[in-house]
Amino acid sequence: MKRFIPILLLIISIIITSCKADERKTTVSFFSMDTYMSIDAYGDSSEAAQKAKNRVLELEKLFSATDANSEIYAINSGNFGSVSPETLELTGFAVEMSKKTGGALDPTIYPILREWGFTTGEYRVPDSETLSELLKNVGIENVKLNGNSISLGEGVMIDLGAVAKGYASEECAKILRENCVASALINLGGNIQLVGSRPDGEPWRIGVADPLEPLDDKNVGILSVTDCAVVTSGNYQRFFIENDTVYGHIIDPKTGIPVNNDLLSVTVIANDGTLCDALSTALFVMGYEKAERYWRDNRDFEAVFITKNNTVCVTSGIYQNFELSEYFDFELVEIK
Ligand code: ADP
Ligand code: MG
Image (cartoon, rainbow, N blue to C red):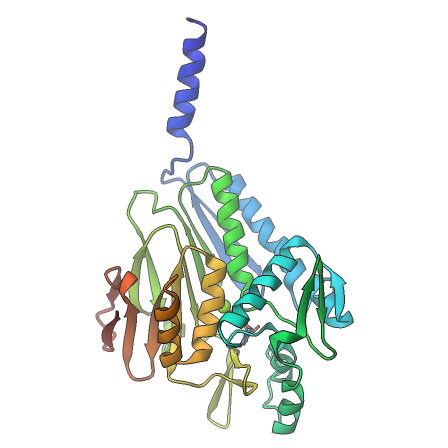
C-alpha cells in the first residue's frame, strides 16, 4: 500500500493542477484569412497556442477562394471534386444555414463578390445587366454534397468567407481545451471565441465596436461573457465609396448589391462560433425586422443590433450582460 500512496498523491495533484489558468500569458499574432488574428492563452499554453495558429493556417489553405491551391478554388474551377472532411463539413453547414436563413446567407454569392472587386481590392460598381446575368447562378440549390464530394452547377462558385473564421475559431478553442488551456481569448479579425473565463475567474469584457467610428477603436458597449463566441458583421469593415455611396462587402443575394438596410451592425453571441459567424452575416442581410423575428423563432443565440434609427437592441438573454458606453447616446432597447 505504501508504494501506492505517492502514485495516488501524484494522480490527485495532476487532477487538481490540470487545466487551471494562471496569469502567465502567451500571445500569438499572425495574419491569415485576409485579416489580423491573435490568440491570448493563459497558464502553460505556449505550445497549444502555436498549434491553434497552425490549424488556422491549415484551414485557410483548404477554404480560401483565391488561393489557386485550395480545395474551394479547385471546386470553383472544375465544378466538382472530392474534398477534405473539414471542407465538406463547413460547406454542408453553410448550405444548411443558407436554407435556414431563407438565402440571406448564400456562399454562391462569390461570382458577384468578384464582380464588385471585393476579392482583389479593384473595386467597381457593376452594371445591372452584368448583375442580373450573374444572379442567375446564385442560389444554394446549385450546390450538392454527395459522399465526400461537392458539385456545383455550371457557372456557380462558392465562397466560405462568411463562416470560415467562425469555424477556425471553434477549432482553435478545441485545440486549446484538448491541451488543457482553461482560459483564452481567440480573436480572428474581430471574430471572438472565448475559452473559459478570464484567468482571475471574472467574465471577459468584450467591446462591441462603434460602426460609425470603426477606426477610433471606440465601443458602443461592453459584453461581459464567458466560454462563448462573439461575432460582429457590418458593412463598415470592408467597403469602398463611389459617388458618395458606400458599398460594403456583405451582399444581398436577392439583388447582388451590397446590403444597405436599417442595420449598422449585428453582433451574435452563442456557444458555437461557426453558428455566430453564419448568423451575424445572415441577420445583417435580413435587416432588423426579419432578424428580430429570426431570433424569436430560433432563440439558440443572443444578439446586439445597432440600427440606423439610433438604437441598440439587445436580446433578453444577454441584456443584463451588456453595458452601453457613456459616450454613445443611442437608445438601449431590450428585445423580449
Ligand atoms: P467578416 O469576414 O468581415 O468577418 P462576415 O463574416 O460577415 O464578415 O463575412 C463577410 C464575407 O462573406 C464577405 O467578405 C464575403 O466573402 C462573404 N459574403 C458576402 N455576402 C455574403 C452573403 N450574403 N452570404 C454569404 N457570404 C457572403
Ligand atoms: Mg460571418
